[in-house]
Every structure is written in structure tokens, then in C-alpha cells.
Length: 238
Ligand code: C5P
Image (cartoon, rainbow, N blue to C red; front, side, top):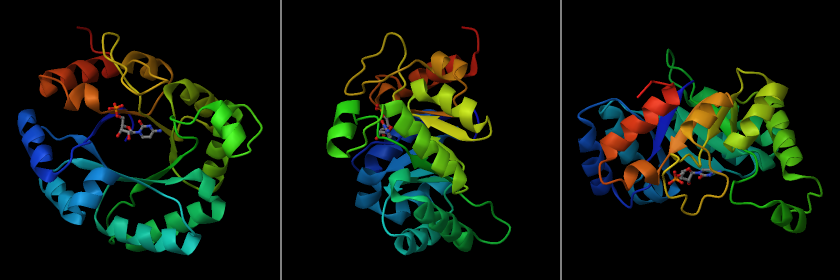
């Protein structure tokens, strides 16, 4: 998991996914399947990606009562994915339920999927958080608090922005995973992301894994873009 580059497969259907993956000449990747794709294609898309030996982050961001999340996670572990997530706002009991479900659904001899929590979505501004969620503290404090209860619940880490990763790592230790989207090269279009950073900044901030979507998936040459991101992320001299 550490030092991974996760490609966000934000495509409409499986045809688009597999025509994109054909450009990688059989290279084993770490890919992220989100709600759009999973709700269209269902568990069969996971099966097909596993047949191609890719590692999988199933990004469904669960947030419900503990018993429901526990049962859902049992089914998700049964799919054999590597990483799943919840919203930390669901609370410690819900996160503990998620872990219990994952453990119950993991076949014997297999590794339990890692489980991370979303703190504050990167699309949420401080004003929005304070006015709509009535959380009257700075955004960073809320992120750190959610990260801290995530660790207390026994989860493996959080989804956060690169800018928050260094503080989380300092407070909660380097084995607590920080997975960060919003990654762009210096020359890239930022699109709708607000708090973006380069792979090199992510590396300098001690991020565990980066998630890259459109800069690779919408590139004229996806494989070449992937290699550029990977080299900068791994600190390989160009
Ligand atoms: O295209 P881009 O690189 O911005 O894609 C980032 C991916 O990470 C998308 O799949 C998006 O849904 C996801 N994500 C995010 N911010 C979060 C959580 C997930 O951008 N806080």
C-alpha cells in the first residue's frame, strides 16, 4: 500500500475501462473503482479487474448505522478488494463495525482489505463546514479530530489532502495511511480540484499513496502520463 500510485477509473462503463487498460501492456496497476462505475457495472467489474491482477481500491465511502455498514463491508471483503473506505462522520462504533464486517468477510488465509476514512471532503470549504455542519472550528482541526477517532477505531488511515497529510502523520504516526487525491503535475490543468499538489510535494509531505484521475485517464497518451507521475512520485531522476 505504501508508495502506491492509484489510478481513479472514473469511466462510465466497463467498455471504456478495459479499452483504457489495454494501453498499459499488461502492467499490474493499483486502480480505484468509485460509485459511478460500481453502480453501473456491479461486482463483475471487480472480478474482471482481479483477473487482470490489478490491486483495487473500492471507493464507496460508506456512512450508515453500524450494523448496516458491518454487513455491507462483509460483502465487500468477499469481493477480494485491497482497500475500502467510510466517512469518519459515521462515528467510532460505525468504523469498528466496518472492521468487524471486513474481518468476517475475509476468506481464511487472505489479508483483510485495508480500511480508511474520509475526514472532510476536499470539496467542503471551511465556511460550508461551519455553517452547514455547525462545526465551529478551523477545517484543519476538524480533519485532525476525524483522523484521530479513525485511528482510535482501529482503521488503517484516512483520505485527506496533501496539505493535511504532514500534520496527520506528525500527530498519528507514519504507519497510519494518508491517501491523497488532487494530484497534478506543475503543467497540468487543475479542473475542479481546489487544494492540489504535485507528486513531489506529496512525497515530501510523507503521503502514503496518491490518487490520480483525469491527468492520466483523459491524457492523449495515458501510459506516458502514468510513467511521468510515477517517476516524480518515486523520485526517479528524469
Ligand atoms: O481527476 P482527479 O485526479 O481530480 O480525480 C481524483 C479522484 O479522487 C476522483 O475519483 C475523486 O472522486 C476522488 N476523490 C477526491 N477527493 C476526495 C475523495 C476522493 O478527489 N476527498
